[in-house]
Amino acid sequence: MNKATEATKKLIEAVVDTRLELMLLSGTPMHKHNITKHWSRLDQVFLLKHSSKMLISCDTLSGKRGINMDHLPVLTELRLKVDTMAAVPILNFCNTNWKDFRAKLQKQLDKTPNSACILD
Image 1 (cartoon, rainbow, N blue to C red):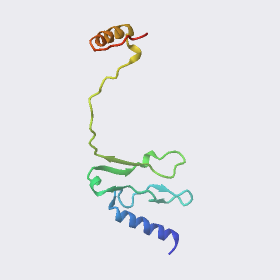
Image 2: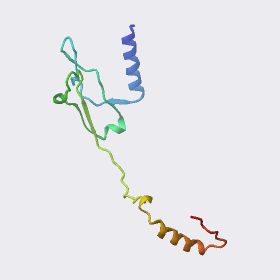
Image 3: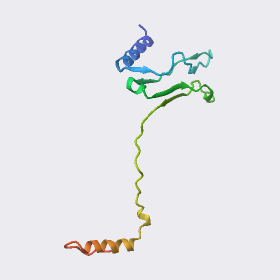
Image 4: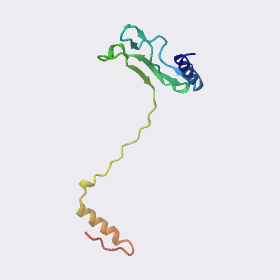
């Protein structure tokens, strides 16, 4: 068995062992050979079975091939749930009125037992 066949066999075994599923339709061209100019399929897109339910689409973008590029871009669109959080304001200490801050801090410290003098 040659090295390429052995490598292919190992790849297929890994895909089967991890239960990956192929997402691009069989025969989807994505690579144009520089010399023969024939289209082939070198790239693959795999998802786990539970993730494949989130797949909206997976295809090559034939009209978006870049200059001197031999591969087509692959666009994979997934339906993902994204948790969002409300924005929390962040204090900007550069805008602090330090004179007012020190006065309010002093009032609070005066209420505590054994407060010590704050030096400027």
